[in-house]
Length: 488
Image (cartoon, rainbow, N blue to C red; front, side, top):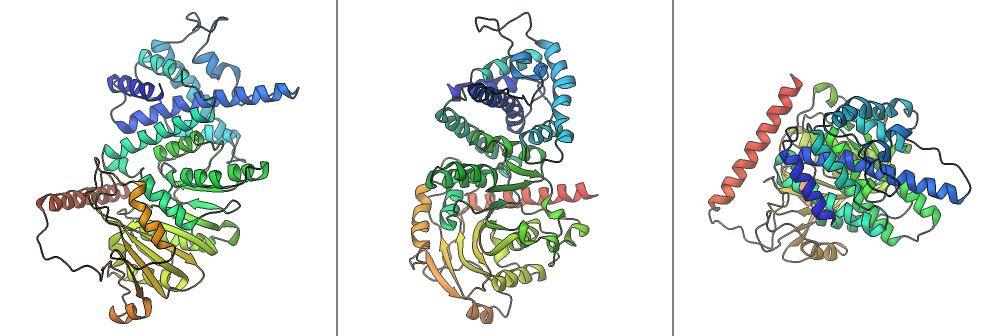
């Protein structure tokens, strides 16, 4: 039922003049789904209050509640066609009354940014209704109204389908791919860091909030289900920041569908914050992230960092190190060229991480791990507060060509997780001494992945591999040029 409903909504959006891509589909589905969820949440809270003999104060005024504008019904539960808005009247109401009313919540709740009221205001301040046909919108609303939110199984299925939509957005191309990190990789990263209830978990470039959602699932499934623990997990555990409007909205919606009522995601550009202003109260026990790379930041943004560079991912890495508590653990996805770039900033940053943290593990991911992007990535695992003496490398080899039809699986990650616990040696894993590395690389701290257990093959690369790399480089160049044009 759920899957078919989502497919039917996409079909309607495809026919509408205002929605042009998978990005639009998920954006428009999100705001309708959010309002349907909000109605369910308010109904549940009103019922709970009634059982306690109390009156519930609704967040949304009566005229703007789902049963009144979206799905007014007769006494026998059928749609009341006399009160139902459709066609141009529906679009006019949504664009000129509903959205402006909901957007006002941001100003009204500005002193309480963690509240659901503030999230409502932020979401409807940042997006617009793109469905041009009020008849199409009427169909979408009626389909969404039929989705059940009642049981935990319902919510689990809805969250799974929403994740699938995010993944499809990644398949649609590079613009969508930035929102999606393969979930098996995220789960493996979390398993290695093994967060505990009471620890604060952070992602400063959270996108669709995949890391935070998976961390929530990991903790929820392992913790004792006490009232105190549930409150801690809901309110004081998961923190994120996101710069882009659509990613922010998707992230909030994704966390809500996973069971987090008022996600602690802030809509901001993390890199505009001066890392010298980060204090102990601002620090976290666990950081999980896949920060954007390839962007070029303005000189004034670079002034917020000790190591000046325009490379976005390198600035984020400095932010993560500064944001970790002493003894805090991090797992960060980064482009593999970071390990060997010879520019002064890259060398300084590698030296900084080795001296201020124990970079105990580097996981080398195969090409094709990230759908829609041909770049090679590694994952850095480190603990803050002690210098690095040895680094354990693991070169993931699933034994097949990765891609849309052969995506990364949990089974692919199992051997890495098992071996990492003891830093075991194997044909795919080895350990290097940082002291020896510093000597052999003449102080450049080149951390390139060089498996001593495998002979380098002199065979020429396949044409397809060359074409994929060329396409990836073209896409990255286009992204950099776009970033530069935005700065001009």
